Length: 166
Image (cartoon, helix red, strand yellow):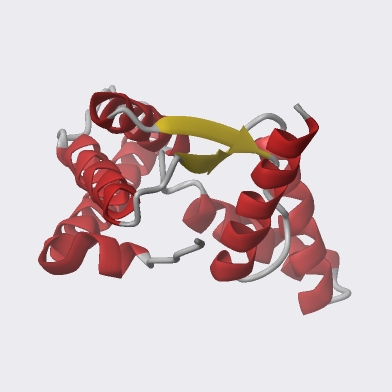
């Protein structure tokens, strides 16, 4: 069985923590930028809020897997993810405008929004929670294009086909 939940659905009443973490990252980024322009030290660290949000997400993912008695949880393989994201950003920027400066500005803004999340840290938390629950983790290549729901569906199907070949 395939099931899909948005981040808002996974976090529930804790969704406000995600917004707070995003605002915190934005504020720190701005402070770092100001410090760099002033040639001042910019060793501003983040709080542990991001790690806490990742743990909440991982825990809820495992709870859903247990609820449906899933044999495994499929996560995207992050190999070459930067290149995939970069090509997706470039394609979207080219769709926006034929003017190179507009494309560069759009690509920069989009990169900032995409790189707000530590996928590696989230996946490590999912691995940890799943191991504690005795649930197997599978990795598969994720599609570049499509809605989150479509990507999740294709990811699960790719893992299924990979399992059938083994």
